Length: 299
Image (cartoon, rainbow, N blue to C red):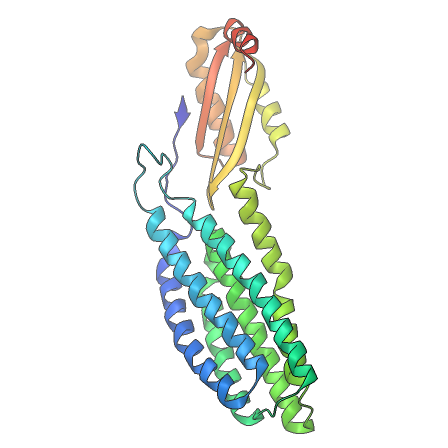
């Protein structure tokens, strides 16, 4: 017996903004790569590399939304909702690998600093900062609701900070001639995003491992269900996240009078929805005899 919620995802309503951010990012990425090659700036190329992961990340996010909208099938009873989580996981892994490469390249440039064209570097970075700020504004609301959009938002945030770093590096080189500012800030751009990326990676892995959502207290839920009149025990209670904005719960309630199962089920569903914000609720109501039979079978 269950109460089904909507299979719409939190990211879907932000798909138009994701598409606009993708178009802006892809366009500027090309300009930044060209600018990095012309100026010889690692900081600019590092920022361009972050832009490239943004293009991949935003593209994956939109692809995940399309897959998530597909109806469920007998083979995939939840449809493709987990595609959003896989997208976020992919983004996090790419960013971590990219950081390793940037640090390696920075080390090589410390050994042999190239000549940097600070003027063009500054112009490209200023344009990049404007593009990143607009993209962040487009994705800000969605990042509060969807892990998938949050992944894209963090990548754009990393790019925004990268653009600030490139601006700083270009100004230092322009006014002091200290060429090592470029690889130093380039490495910093790579490292700065690591903590946020690690958090995103942990969140995605927790969902794939079907861990209890951070905002749900299972002990409190068990106690709440146990106070329903007629309920004598609560067991096999599980809470997990299917995808961002879609949590699910299942459990067994033991009752004194099995004939009252409808009232007990209705009250349990109501409490879980109102107090814990979970719409997809699956509950089995059973009497002591059934519970004893389950125990003998090892359930």
